[in-house]
Image (tube, rainbow, N blue to C red; front, side, top):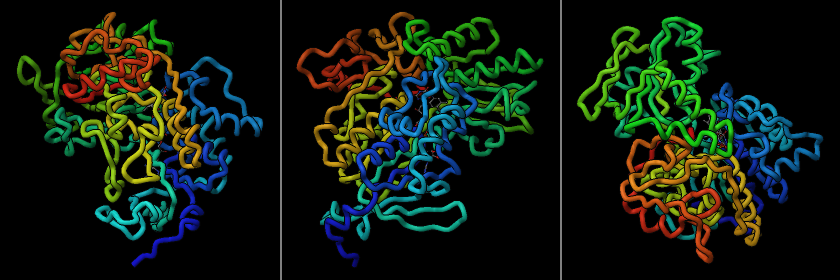
Length: 490
Ligand SMILES: Cc1cc2nc3c(=O)[nH]c(=O)nc-3n(C[C@H](O)[C@H](O)[C@H](O)COP(=O)(O)OP(=O)(O)OC[C@H]3O[C@@H](n4cnc5c(N)ncnc54)[C@H](O)[C@@H]3O)c2cc1C
């Protein structure tokens, strides 16, 4: 039987951070700043591996909002300066100009090519309660050279993101019938249409499914290609009855680039360059040679989208919970976010770009010392933004350091989307929709027009994500009726 280590031994173990994306690296900065031992484990060959996979896409967030303030302070001490441009970075620029130098600060505390396969408590499976919190975490590792290993840790921050777990095309959340067999023709949510993957799309017919920013980016790039290469055609299928939510807040969006994405998409659809198929729920894929037919239901009955050479499923992402199977989690049953966080981020009810401040308390699980942070903390909700993750890890690391005053003092100011209100039909006021300007594919019956009103004095700063703060009491009243989540920011 494994002995229980003395408290001093447990405290001497490092904090393990999983994932060297923007949020895992921000966590490392806070841990370093507080003098806490840590190890950062990254599956990819470099820091920012996931960000680099969508490196050709320009973010909509200007540089000033992206670096974590503590990370920035540590970097500045080395002579680093934040890029002085109002133009938001691409994924590649974010990795090169911020994530790489930040990872370099931490030397061999960042271990790349090291995948975490599973996490547990040393010597205890999930069913054992006695003395659980006194046991170290044990992380099962898989190295790129094929070898494995284990790492003991006093606490774990899972910042592994959701990029590697895209949602399937099937409207039910299961892969559509025939989806696995069509994998050769599925190109992921954000293919590099104008660069690396150009040959797959030039002169060919592509279907994009989804209504968030990934779909928008892919549609705009395909349209640019179509203008250059005759015979290139684009079909866009969405679950909602119309595309207005994908058009976002336009000029009302505080992030100009995010607003412009939606405006450009609106212009593109109006021009007729994209064939829009609304109210479409994918059920089946049929491959014949190098073409696929995507079959779906619509209010008018079955519809077949034939003659497609490629399908980009921009249907959102979901968290990898398999690696957490031996830990005690308390998750929102729909979103797979921590239960306390679910009501604050449910995309069926609120817009993104704005969320109530939240920190270690909302992110806690019944497994003391374990936190999911960053994109993965939002589970299936697609509304995550990097500044939110920066504040999450500031709070969590302060709690691990025993500084509860700092841990509880959570602050968050996010740029508004300009689409923060729902009318009584769940449709965005002012011709736009909630949720990062996307169409979650669900109506929100009964959502009152006041769903995003300012928070009255004295109420806790929790509830609907609403820009500044607000909607707190309405969240608890309405959540029981809330429909499922849908595609949004990504
Ligand atoms: C195209 C696109 C554009 C976006 N634009 C914006 C924007 O403008 N503004 C904004 O605020 N947000 C944006 N986001 C949303 C989000 O903020 C980013 O996805 C951000 O990169 C999330 O950071 P993260 O650190 O939580 O996760 P990631 O950046 O996904 O990093 C997770 C890391 O963990 C590693 N990893 C995964 N599994 C394991 C494992 N088992 N073991 C070890 N390592 C593992 C991955 O390789 C990866 O490097 C965008 C997202 C996308 C997809």
